[in-house]
Amino acid sequence: MTSSIRVVLVDTTHPGNIGGAARAIKNMGLSSLYLVSPREFPADRALWRAANAADVLDNAVVVDTLDEAIVGCGLVIGTSARDRRIPWPLLDPRECGERVVAESAHHPVALVFGREDRGLTNEELQKCTYHVHIPANPEYSSLNLAAAVQVITYEVRMAMLQVEQGKIPLQEWDMPPARVEDIELYFQHLEQALVDIGFHDRDNPRQTMARLRRLYSRIRLDEMELSILRGVLTAIQNVAFRLAGEKGKSD
Ligand code: SAH
Image (cartoon, rainbow, N blue to C red; front, side, top):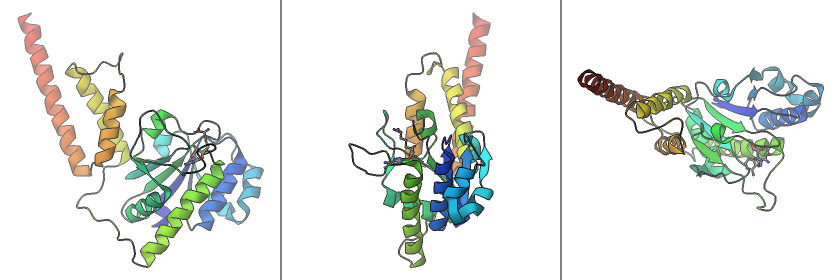
């Protein structure tokens, strides 16, 4: 269960924070660290801060993009130090810990942390199923990156201990949730279908796709539902192409 919980750090500037995060991860009984294009890694400063968690650094998976870091995950939770323009389904750290542990028994789960200076971009946050915010001092709510990893992984640890004591039931559903990469393909298909039927204009997108992403994120599509929806889109596109062809002939 613990190896299916990934901590993902995006574009980290200071290697010391990577080491601090590795230590927090191991202290809380986790092991899996993904680094998306870290500025400096491997690095001595990361090793110093990791103390006896050097094994977490040795096993860290370094990738170029967030998509690669979350591939295969059925649940992705993005952390945010402040409110964003479009509010997203939000968990507090305790709910986050419980959900992560409950779902990690069935599929890989990712906890995504942002850059020291700018956090996660809106595009990255919109790939997440939920957001989690640590309710810190509203006048100074931005924690150090490694400290934020510590708080969130502590809640995961507390939830794991609760599960061991039978206090949190593990979640059951007849179908696995759709994997993030399949959801990304669905959104590409949906956008194309909306263009094909003249509903959506890529040159004037407004917030349509962001709002649709949020809608689906609230629903939590499973694999079967996703494949039905892909079939519906293809059928709609076929009608649109046929009508366009008939119109082309009669013009
Ligand atoms: N100035 C940035 C803060 C980045 S802090 C911003 O406004 O977004 C670096 C990272 O630490 C964040 O991307 C997030 O992953 C985590 N973090 C810091 N404070 C947090 C908080 N209060 N709740 C959740 N995550 C937090």
